[in-house]
Image 1 (spheres, helix red, strand yellow):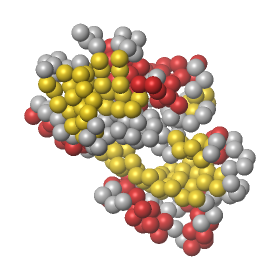
Image 2 (cartoon, helix red, strand yellow):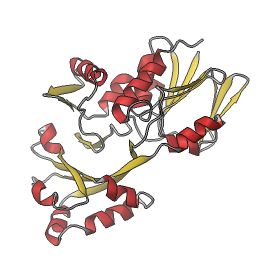
Image 3 (cartoon, helix red, strand yellow):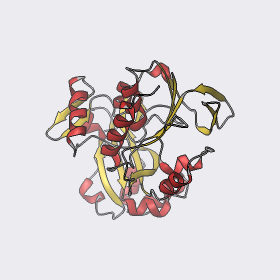
Length: 303
């Protein structure tokens, strides 16, 4: 049985992890340079900057048990009810898959079902074929952007999934620079500030990740990240702007950061077309939904 998974974020990697014991021929396609999705880590030489999700704080018992397993395998460490990555939060997704089965920098734009087999095509017109099963784990709007035949009722349901965006400002420097978080929080566009260097106990490297509010990001999410960065920085006073100039600044927009609505089903599965969909918008919301839907879809017996 030959299986394709589109998306190497948490849902896709956890789905792979649940399938790998039963099926050997699995390929996971990812449009970015590596795994993680919102569990992403930027590497600055030998330093890690987690610029999406910074740590995991489980709400459900399922996610707590998952985190405890990660802890026992040395991927994260527990601190009260929080689980902190040891070497970058993207290691969670790396732990779940065999990277030999990962195709990076590959955005699948078309999927066609012919003669009981799936044929995939990426945006550079490369063809990947003869898949018996296709699983899609990317955000709902990105599925609707693909050229793929879906049932009309499913398309309608996917079109009703709405997301909040988040804009992230990544700051890093080899200088020892301290930011006054209390002062920065006076900016109404800021939701959260992570002292990334403190998290990893770096002494020769300063790094912060500043996350915008959802309201700010939702208003600007059709602009380029460079345009958003300019707008975001314009709302700081001159002294703070001068301080920021001592850092290298990287901007990132998480357009589909948090699903605001969810489908009242654990996952989607069409046996006739050998197509399954899971993600952060099934049954629950976000991290818990991603975990549960990928585990349940991965537990189905396929023949």
